[in-house]
Image (tube, rainbow, N blue to C red; front, top):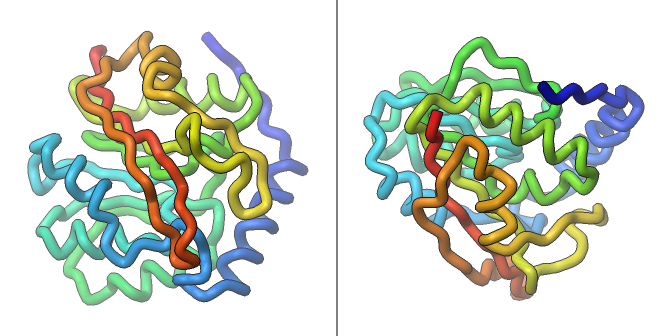
Length: 215
């Protein structure tokens, strides 16, 4: 069993950083903005999960992924983000829909939900974890909270991606890196490499992997 001790001071600094980002920048003033996240939507749809499957968007920020999923009649879409500011805006924006899921205001490494998920979506959270113990903790959370035969969709900066995001250091990953890291409990079933065009017309190269839980 792997144990990881949360550094509360680091969590507070991270929270302060992301609250400031979402308080001071326009929704389209961040590099990851997508009004319609087509890559994520297509990968979720080809997983062929049921419309009432438990989905979670990890590190959602102010993403429009939940809006698009609710419009497509997925009925249990939960969110987690360290920024309460971001979650409040998304909650207000999506209140017109009859239901979604739970909004978790938490650092991902301190995530303790009382449920497991059929599909776990992470676009550009994992690559912010730069220490080995953080990476191992994240993997153990995925192993614990993704159902057997559930899906993990994870997108990170590729080997050709940027070195930083939002002023923070990141780790870049190849498809093989991601496949190997999660290989104890997941098998790779699909992957793709894309260029994300930011609102500032710069290019960020991503690897997306779809992994299926084995046990």
